[in-house]
Image (cartoon, rainbow, N blue to C red; front, side, top):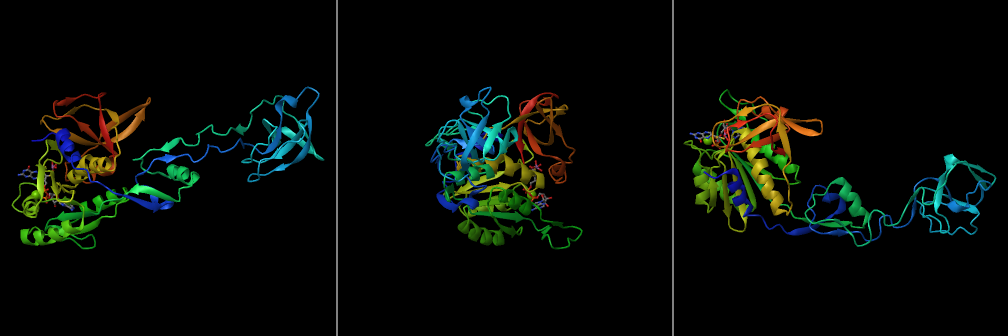
Length: 395
Ligand SMILES: Nc1nc2c(c(=O)[nH]1)N[C@H]1C(S)=C(S)[C@@H](COP(=O)(O)OP(=O)(O)OC[C@H]3O[C@@H](n4cnc5c(N)ncnc54)[C@H](O)[C@@H]3O)O[C@H]1N2
Ligand code: MOO
Ligand SMILES: [Mg+2]
């Protein structure tokens, strides 16, 4: 059976060649940048006043010279002004261009202004005080954002600052989510005693929503002809198919054979891990990919985070290092499988700690309510002592 690393490696051999598209600035949040972003001018673009007050030449402050005649007023948004007489001052507002001939700003709180004369009350005034010098934070032409950056609100601020009303981002894939199983009924239905409401498809759709992907939802019955008919249409109309269920050894687990009949090239079917052993991954023509996630809700969730998300990130040319956290208690796990443990994270003395949550297995969706991450324990060992650190996947 394939190890988790090998399975992931094989999945990453099939990235989707996402095209680029331009979107309006505000629609770029949560998307992945497909262009390099450079500063179109210095950051800040001029010597910027950082306090409301008066601008003076600092060297003019002497023991007996603390009064300055006010020459005028420089609001933010007005062109640069020049101090005509170095014994004078100009009133300046936060955000204004520092007047030429001045090199210090004394805040109003440290001045007395009376009848056009400012008296500096502050003991010391040093050259450069309360001035945000041009280009301190970035020079014109400097690369501020790299391709592959996931755009967060702060990035939107930078994009706006450099004048990008349209932003080039990677186009998102069209994704179909298919749940399977005759025991499953709609959220709005009242399940009979032998039925359950479908939750996996909604959980997956919500997770994809966090990637800005609006997936289409379908449900397939445990019936191969019907499944084939539906999946033929769905795979024609979508680039990515994520199924949940019907991939194990059951007499009604028809998904692998139905997809093979539709032309899916199986890449693998089974990974040495718990949960999520019967994971299926395959490809279709035109770079289409299929993830057959095992149906137990926690398996679906784990496989989405451990395999689908890295595939999406790699396709969007994003790289990611997995952080680690230290176990707070011993874990014994004998099978030679990679073990994904739902954990709750905390911090102590600057260290991230992982405490396993109580769970009754991969069918226990409620275990995810307490957890904030998955801790991945390698297959080679069976005893994992408290204090040892392992990679975590946040969700
Ligand atoms: N003989 C074997 N039996 C099983 C094996 C095995 O290796 N040999 N593997 C087990 C593992 S591990 C898992 S995980 C499950 C995976 O099974 P399937 O992918 O075939 O999924 P189903 O049989 O369709 O369903 C399993 C379970 O999950 C519930 N489910 C499915 N979809 C949803 C949904 N959308 N919302 C809520 N719940 C869902 C379903 O009702 C079942 O209870 O197989 C083991 N068996
Ligand atoms: O994916 Mo299964 O847990 O190993 O139920
Ligand atoms: Mg099954």
